[in-house]
Length: 344
Ligand SMILES: NC(=O)c1ccc[n+]([C@@H]2O[C@H](COP(=O)([O-])OP(=O)(O)OC[C@H]3O[C@@H](n4cnc5c(N)ncnc54)[C@H](OP(=O)(O)O)[C@@H]3O)[C@@H](O)[C@H]2O)c1
Image 1 (cartoon, helix red, strand yellow):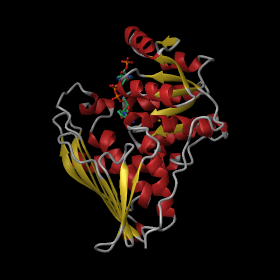
Image 2 (spheres, helix red, strand yellow; image 1 turned 60 degrees about the horizontal axis):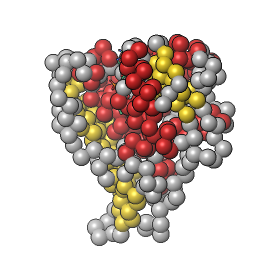
Image 3 (cartoon, helix red, strand yellow; image 1 turned 90 degrees about the vertical axis):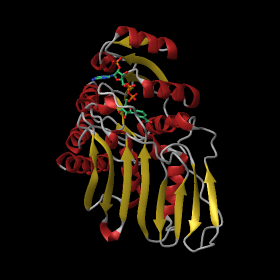
């Protein structure tokens, strides 16, 4: 039996007592621009500075987003007394270096996904942030979207029955360019790091850490994973089948299957989207959910920023929604999958 109606999302709404933090951005690239816009338009947070390896790029970003300060390094940015939190939006290989620098300066950090390029690095960052008493959080924005809250409640309430299946895909057609960060092993490129992490984190959210990881796929001529299917076996017999690719665009859909009901996400399961909760029997009724907040696509980055400010206000050093132990476990799954693909 499906419930009469779907639960309300618990949201990290701006203006609910969270501190208004002053943010510095490291790496004025594509996602940094989307993040700055989302903060300006949909939060009580304020971006005040940016650091870049190029004074011109830093100045252009600051002018576009109305920022007061431009810095030449993460160290200078993090040392500035008017910055409370550092958002790291550089390629994945740099996350550990910039993250440790910000933490050493006593600043909170929001680090783009993937948090680091390995579970070992994730552990080092987590230990450093705990020792410093600052908050470290992966910018896994999907976890802070309204749909994640509704999904969590449906799972916790047992509405799906025994959940044994997660199917998810994330394929984008990225033209081959050996200089593009996604095709460069030295920058932490590859489909799993950039795209596959979304299906892997969904599997972790629903079924927890796997007991067994099996990856089949291929490599680019630059030796990053071009595409793969990762099969995860979970305790109790649950299984996940997770596809990612730099070679072809896919529906970016997700299905979570249980003995009593199934959730089918619309396209872009990791972005603000809709889903259908469907009874397990043929002809069973279904319930549709769509994001009621009006925030679409990258406006959705604002939720994680307000969540971070809320956690800082509560004196936390990590996110209760996406804890560092889980971040590390997700990286460990990706480590295993990448090692298998490289060895094949
Ligand atoms: N949440 C999301 O939806 C989402 C979407 C896209 C990307 N991301 C993540 O965000 C991160 C950045 O991705 P992006 O697409 O924004 O990349 P991008 O456009 O290439 O921007 C990265 C920025 O980092 C700096 N940078 C480049 N190479 C560097 C290096 N070797 N060391 C230090 N800094 C370097 C560059 O700025 P300067 O050269 O000016 O210093 C560059 O503008 C990645 O981790 C990615 O997975 C998240």
